[in-house]
Image 1 (tube, rainbow, N blue to C red):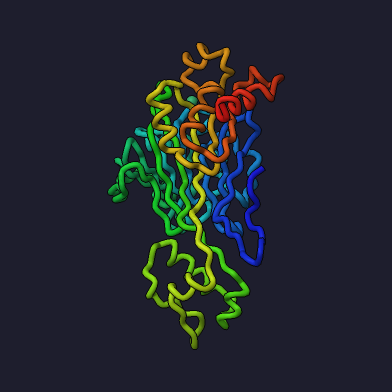
Image 2 (cartoon, rainbow, N blue to C red):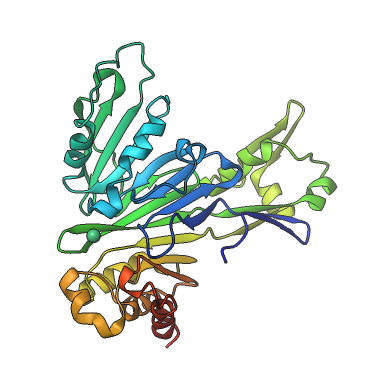
Length: 340
Ligand SMILES: [Zn+2]
C-alpha cells in the first residue's frame, strides 16, 4: 500500500509532504485526492464522482487539475462548488484549452440572485494549458460568477503550478480530444534528527518549518534562521548537524490516452522516476482494437509506459466495467508489462 504520511524511524521524523489516494475503486470514476500532512490543504486530480470525499476534505482543496471534460472526469464540479461556495479562499482549476468555457457553462446553470457584495467572495480561477498556460479566467461570487479575463501566470512551459513546497507539470495527450496528464514534484524532503538538534541546544518548534522551507527553496547556507528572540542558527549549521535531506516524491497521474507512440513517450517523460504512477488501464490486451477505437490505453500499454518511465510503483485504475467480474485481469497485465 501507500507509504504512511509520517513515520518515526531511527530518531528521524520522516516527513512526507503529501499522500495520494484514489477517490474511487478502479472500476468507478477516476480521480486522485492528494492530502497534505496535518490536513492543512489538499489537491484533486479530476472531478468525477466525489461522493467518498467528506465536505471537510473538499473544503481543503486549493487546486483541481482536470484532465479533460468528459463526464466521468468533470461531473463532480457541482459537488465541489456546493461545498466551497461559502468559503473565502480561492479555488483554482487547471484544464485543457477551452476549459474555462466548460466552467462558465456549469456556473451559468444556476441562479445567483442571492449573491451580492455582502457574500463571501469565493473566486474561481481557471487556467487553460496547451503546452503552457495560455489563458486565465476568473469567476467571483460577488459578481454572480461573471467571467473576467486575467493575465496568465508567468510559468515555465510544461509547468502549471509553482508552490514553495512542490510544483506540478503537465503534458497534453491525445484522447481524440486534448487530455492533460500531470506530475506533482515535491521539492527536497527535509527530515530532522531530534537528538542532534538537542545536542546543538536547539528546541523543536515552528521555526523548523521556516528552516525546512528555506532549504526547499534553495536558500544559501549562510541564511540565518531565528529560533526564538534570543537565538539564531544558519542553514549551513543545521544542514551539517541536524538535518537529513532527500529528494521529494514524484506523483504522476495519467488517464484517457490513445496507446500510440507519441502519447507513450510523452506520458513516460512526464512520469520519469515517479514514486507513484497512477495510470489508466482501461482495456485488456486482447481488446486492443476496442482500446484504439475509444482512444484509451490497454493494460499492457500502461505497464510499458510505467517501465519506460522507470516508475517505482504503478497503480493502475480507470478499468472498463466489462472486466468487473475479473478484477485481477488488468492489474496482472499491467504488472507483466511493467516487470517484463
Ligand atoms: Zn475521456
